[in-house]
Length: 112
Length: 115
Image (cartoon, rainbow over all chains, first blue to last red; front, side):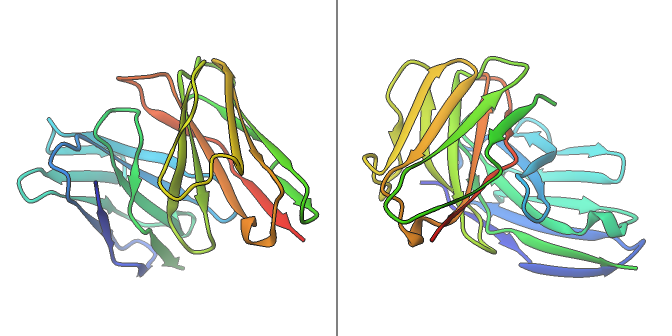
């Protein structure tokens, strides 16, 4: 089955700096890769996603890149703000909207 | 995005009792719902997948007689934790999808504490 790894497990950056979180997956059949932000005591919120036919996608300060050959994808957050502090999960799925396998999560702290 | 509402957000129950958690899709028809469990500082682990009108598919290691899932309508799925024990204490999260070609949306989660 699919296995998703995520690094780093914790990340601290200064406000205004960029943050990068990387994930790798094992199942070449996976074709949908969402990223979720989870704040304490709340459910995950989708922040950006990418499908396998696209190499990069950007939404304001957030971007995701995908390398299908290497089976890895990354989340890039620029101009970080304290409210970006949360746990971020990557996920992989073999079907858009179907079951996801989640990475172990990255706790991002943005220091003012 | 679409709204998925989960209720209750927090519940405390006595050991041996049963607890029901509801997951509702408020503005779309959810043909598929997923139930996840999350322990503190850990990732989400899929428990089961339910399709409207059919029996849920449970992941390996998840007791179907303990975690009863019902998906009787296109907007509601329920998870019942039967004969709850302290080790069942966890954060339970549902997500709902309109089917192939649509993304899944997550509920806000339910914190279950069994005392």
